[in-house]
Length: 448
View 1: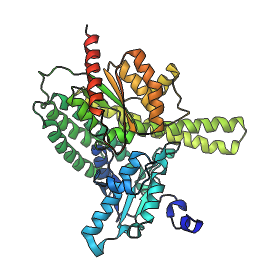
View 2: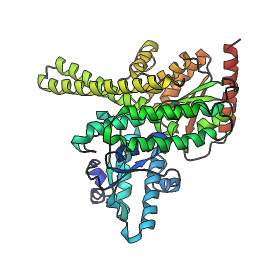
View 3: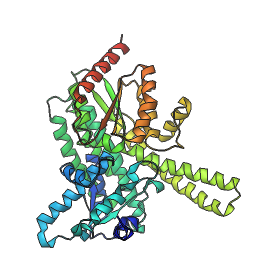
């Protein structure tokens, strides 16, 4: 490829643009089914035509435009957007205009390849003449996903608040489903219930923009929880509790992980997956840590001109993190008065665990900062097994496995690595079955 060829790709000249035209349709790739739908509903509350892209059926397209060196989520998300655009082109014919859409693909800094998804996907879209006009808008973990440049300045604060609330609510609905499905009175009741609950909560978030009252969301959650409690069969005894950690996309995307949670449940587990909110809180916490480090460094180097900027960042990210933790604790406290779902991990506690155990450091970054202490938290809370879910060759999750496997062995807790790529895993069922046998043994030994 020549220099002239490279110049034709917008991705190598420009950063992803902001989403400033509410007349365009904002396309959100599906990672977590519930959370993404509620996030889209939150944008619609502010007159943004947001929709979640259907996922999974474009995998062959994703394979066609990738080399295999990219991680699995890149392949899936690229296939999803290409499949959607081709379907729209066929549906609309001559009326199709890629410029009517904006693709929503966040990024992150650091060694994870996720930070390059939107650049690479921009290159692919630019190589297809009918798709070059589609915009790509991005949020970055560098500023705690602040929405700056994505939404108008006057709306940022409210959109960020409702967006965060939608993520917390999505996590709670997930945990509610995992709490009742292993104990449902008849097969399929819990899944049918959660489909209704998602639609109901979508309507609540769409109407939230007018009054911005969190109590409306809590009241709707109350009704959903009361209905959920009727699905549980009290005669079914408690099952082994399994904690899931790992890469955020794979552990959340049921197609990518081959419906791992349902498979574990089929062999007798009650599962708790790491939350999406955990990552959102971590990005704000990490931005605050970096601002404090920068301030200390500037003081030592007598760069007093930079100190004011660092102080402003400390205040900004400190307020964001404080607000997010306060809202999350408020919602969980309210819900846990009605049903005993698992609380979420506090990010400060996660860092303290790493310091206590001297296993890893937040200075290194990546999701290993969350997965390693989360596994230890599961052990401390009496779980009967831990599963690490990640894309094949994922560096942070490979680090997690190397660090946490001997820890689980010393604690005598069953542990399972489940790496995924675009192929079927031939030994997966037998591995899970063996793991669950060990989990049942562990649960039985606790009561002997």
